[in-house]
Image (cartoon, rainbow, N blue to C red; front, top):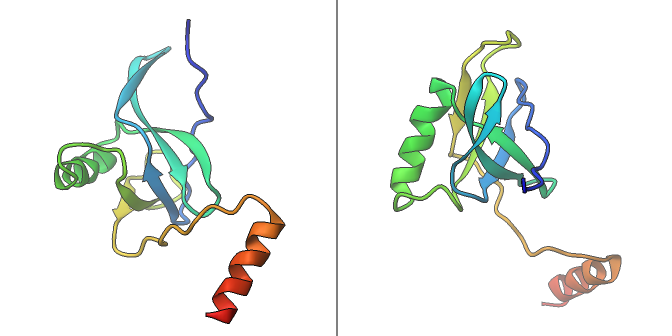
Amino acid sequence: MSKELPPSLKVSTEWIELEIISEADVILTTFGYAPFLLVREITTDIDYRFYISAKSLAIPLEKLRKDNNGIFEGVQFRVRKESTEPKAPYEVDTSSIIPKGPKLNSSEEIKKKLEDALLS
């Protein structure tokens, strides 16, 4: 039985802020096995499947994994393509990640958080 995977992340020349939410896994494609990570876009809280076989991704991601005690999960970074060319290398940056705040599930929770912040 195969597990349901989120959609594949399409990276453009605009920065996308991501948090890795899984360890590396592989999926069988028409070209053979392809390694991927499950990632969450920090600003939208949407999960994606992120293919990581490109050398321009693998090298910086391996450094981030080693710096995170040998695990991918929890690593945050920004990524974009260097240009619009299909085979353009990726750029990876860890210098300016948006801090994660508490998840708010309703307008009442948002209102309460704003009132608490204004009253403190």
